[in-house]
Length: 117
Length: 150
Image (cartoon, rainbow over all chains, first blue to last red; front, side, top):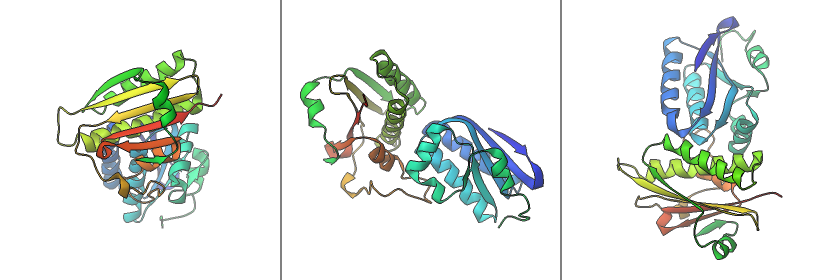
């Protein structure tokens, strides 16, 4: 799990491997702690290196999304792999969180927005 | 109770599961069993990305549920995982038995996917992914069937 500062105060969270029942709680808590400490308001979650995700992984993304939203921030998802996209379709996650095909589009969706709303 | 699809044809043909695992109450062991099931499919000529996806998703969700609910408060809890493959009729069957008290599975809303909740997607995902789903023994035994495309 890596955090990368992008332009306009946008933070990119890089996840990798598999986001699963085992380990999901730790990832969720570490990410939330960082987001709150750094007062992050615009978050792009880079999923290009996540090869698989179960329902607990989806729960992590929902938890981070709600954490941002409660603090007036926004979160989008970027570059899901094939199997992760299938899980998103089955869970209808796209109805809750915007999903972009690549990082550039995801970052661009925040540029020029000013403070997240 | 069968909540989706049909299972009896597998029961008639396969008496004993071809793979049996004991899953201790250690979540990291789930991946070991998934690897062995995928290897079993590969050796039996069932290496297919779609099949692998469905088996991994359903298998992980059933085992995670067994540990989270069936082994809750039982540090030494053991779940049993049985896997059968029948190449003649192109089906794989996975059964997960947990040592818990069970639950009222009849109250499950398997066709309703939670949207904003952090939990509750596991069994709806299995329902959406498997070709058959059956609960037995007060919900402590869950069996799925996945059809293999030729």
